Image (cartoon, rainbow, N blue to C red):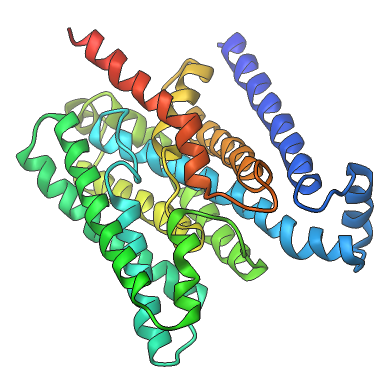
Length: 337
């Protein structure tokens, strides 16, 4: 027991060190070269020089948002995988992120068309409604389709339909603010403000903490519904909370950064391999840290690989994480003969 605890502690310390390194790297790299020493000086002095404004107003909120939202997306995927009892479930793959994206775009079109400025809370609420509706459709299909692979295909189709409608709305919008949503609709942390960071921080921290404190009933649910009932777990309530938490987390990510592919499905699987356990009390913080690290690294690649041109973060996460998803599908197929 102590050896396992020491191993988990060591792995968490290593991940925290890697995250700190990625944080420093993210602040230093970009279209404007700023040395690590200069970055540290700016952080401690809050200098308002040209470099200071780039760090404090542009890079720092973007990096913190990537950490918060990347972690949120990974935890959301983990909760969905527990809910469906399958490691190939995730908010992007099941079309939940696309549903959230559609409702945010529609809300922006409607409100901006009437001259109403949309705030961060309205974006989160719109994304949450879209997530819940997409989740309801997926759950209705899950009742009809017993094969999880077929359910994933249905989820992908739902995602395509929502994305097509979103692109149609954005393409024919007149307002320049709406037209500029094209980059957001592909997934990007560009233009993240401090207001968005604070709102997302509050929502994500609360949702992740609730998930963490529910580790015991979630762990019992993993052992099967009959076992969970014998342990006194209210199955209907727990399933409802899992849906609610995963939807809130994925909706917050989509509202502020657009849909980000494969993080929610691949990172929990990677963390299971790293931690060598499926216990929620270990996996929830591990998924958050793993999601934060991978999303932050992918964001660094997205904005520096072809600088000053920036590619969508979903393009980068797809390149690095899609092979993980393919491996999951192939290994499951081999294990089931």
